[in-house]
Amino acid sequence: MLDPSKVVPEDNWYEIELNGGTFKVLENLYYALDRISRSDSLHGQYIWIDAICISQSDLVERALQVELILKIYASAQKLVIWLGPGDEHVEPAGKLVHHLNLLDEDSRRAILPESLSNPDVERILVSEYHKVEYWTALARLFCRAWFRRAWVVQEVLLSEQSIVLCGEHEFAWQDLVTVSGFLANSPWYNVFAKPTFFAAETKIDGTRTYDKHRMRPHLNGPAKLKAAKKTLRGKAAEDDMLLLSLIRSRRYTCSDQRDKAFSLYGLAKKFANHPERVGSRVITSLRNYLLIVETVHLHADSTLPTRHRSTQG
Image (cartoon, rainbow, N blue to C red):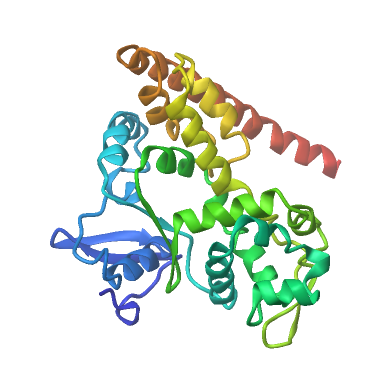
């Protein structure tokens, strides 16, 4: 078990023991490792983590390692999805996710935003799940950054089994898929999408918060990933899988836009008609993509200071 009290963070970097030495990881990964070390089903297991196993600052190594991604995810016993540290919203969101998965589809369909106080709906939801605070907590769960990361597309589609950790809470991936599909195809989708939804909300304890900058929840993310997985495994494969994958993941983001292409290489190779040809084609596409992005970055770097000076004059 990792002991946070023995770690002195420096600019969000934490030191861990690795192969008899020390290795620096960012705060989010540190707490993910701490949580995994306390999981009965994961403790003592071999775990592959890209931030540790691949030198993130070495583009050449990343280009070489991306060749192995397909084998790594396809052969993994389980994909561990880390949504981040817990907060006051995770427990009520987890309870609601669990309850919604106990209901049949017709019962879920009867739960509308405007009918939470309806006696029939209250009977369906039982306990306190008719309270809007539980639904706000659920929306906040889908606001977490993981649901919009470009790398998750390949990770989920190539993996056979997934487990979801968020703070101390553990979700079954299929439970999130079910709730995602329900929300995406109900009036809840439009309610949660309103910019004012999180502007003023009441917490479980009755206090009020104000947050107008909250990220919009990616409600249909898990459901879309399930549909994409089914489509890819059931349709005729294509040689232009990189292009198809880029289109599918256009709403997903990377801190470094060059990673958008890297993150989809495994999909392009696995589902193409001629996998033996994909390596050179995709690597060529990656090189061209990197060149284009680098050129855009250089152009932006050279023009931004000029624009800044012109605004001063």
